[in-house]
Image 1: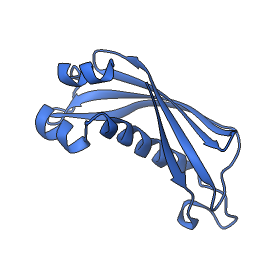
Image 2 (image 1 turned 90 degrees about the horizontal axis):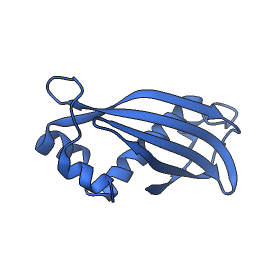
Image 3 (image 1 turned 180 degrees about the vertical axis):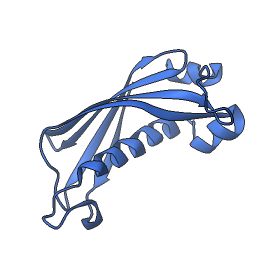
Length: 131
């Protein structure tokens, strides 16, 4: 399952030299994962209010290949590559046109909104993720 999310680089995303701060890529990837879930009808508020769950990042492996710069138009490609009982494993890549800038693997864990302990992904959500 793959999803693409466009990102425009603004001045606030960059340092004085117009190069994107490394931490901004994490924000871009977070937004893309959120929009991926939204495209399936799984808004963050619904997950918390209806299912009583949250997703938290457990692990990120990221490789910075080339820098993005002020005013670049990027694409964040998000692929769900593994679904476990309480784990979603994503592969995320950021491109500027055909140039591959960032490669990342992100593991997120489903936790109870009240307990902050790992819980199983709800069956209704699991069915949507397995399409």
